[in-house]
Image (cartoon, rainbow, N blue to C red):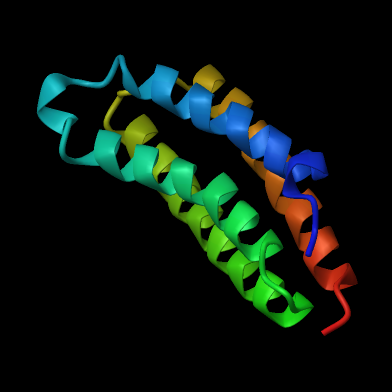
Length: 117
């Protein structure tokens, strides 16, 4: 088992989740059950899957949960691009939040590849 709270990418993903909630607060109210819901659920999924995977007894299981978390990262990236296309966010917001997302992806990918499966 791993101490997920000590993992930098878990810590960053928690902060990222908070950022997604704040950014999506400015979306149109008719998106409450659309992009807002999708973005929020996917952002919560990242630290949640890291934590759940860390509790598993094998690195193989942990790696599987990290793969799910990575999938959520790419889902969010797509949703953020759609948000830009729909003028719900501006290019500067996208650049900033996407920079954080890419950091999470890189750290998680590197950690995942270091697991001995």
